[in-house]
Length: 498
Image (tube, rainbow, N blue to C red):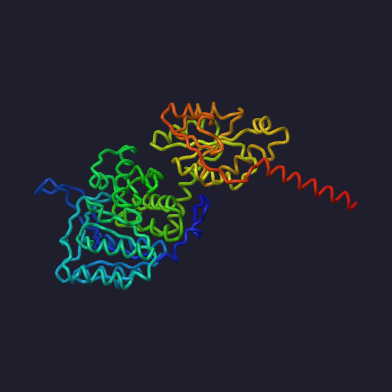
């Protein structure tokens, strides 16, 4: 399934998705108040507590996000035989999360994270927890519980907060069994050695975790790419790197790459943003969205919850509204040359790869759509150069184009893969390419790299040229000829009947 930029909230339907969340269950406590002075005892703020809230944390927050999106969800984890454990059970039940997968270990405390928040500023967090690995009996109970419930789920989210529940044996069993059953697994990791997650469908490290796992330092796109490729080699998994205000980048196992920028926003609290991203990714994947579209939704969702205080969730309606807003900013439509030049420059300054392809697009057919979709996979933003009416007439003859340049531009700008359309009046797009300076130039495989207009100029700037296979038998010229032949046949029949 692909994600249309014009979809409404009713189109984002995850009600048939069933996700099992496995990992570290915890209780998040938030104490809210006001700070107006420093303590006379020490140079620390004094907070007058006005409100106290508890929420599901860790793997429980992933589950809460999934339910908020409309999914059916169950959790598998360990709690203590204590008050906090009872509160966790109550919150799961209240939130319509199946908590039958919880295993009670009387020798462990239920993890509690308490945050003190003055106004909108988090002042302090203190944790009460046991982080030793599970004892053999509890570990065996987790594995047995997993085997007894997994048949009821279509997606598994592994939420690792390094609290000792996800042992090597638990991880190996869960991932191996899911692969046998054809169930996708998504990991939010905390281990330094990510080989323990090998075989998972996708692993979602942040920049710090990626650096620790691979030893590759730096925040440039080239360095992140090098580290992600090393991690793919180690694990055989797709890698989704979350980069805070820089957004997310998805790396496929065959060298594919998709980058998604975070929207500028006032950040109130990042608590649980990773949980929201993981939940949205699982929901979209389970609903049949393509990997890059599922990640796009996850990126948008994370951008929504950082505007909220506390461990937050979001609804399908909130996600749809944010998605619509992003689409209005991203899909520029038909632009003047000056606006296109400034937009491409802005994208490049943001570290995005800007692709360019061109054509007459007189009658848009499946071959055109495939080239545009494949072109978009090779860059972060795609610009289409569109021949003007005068240009088409010179190239194709006085009876062309069939559709005006304004009509053709509107059609192209409505294609999801296209981010910007700019019309040019010359016979070739060479001057347009020189002006825009794209990083990637894409054409059909009926060309060679040497015959692609602008290839030398793009490569001289350090860019790349891509040739995409065409759909056999599809041609606008032949389509126009067939239409005209059909019209003549009808006219002849009418004359004979008369």
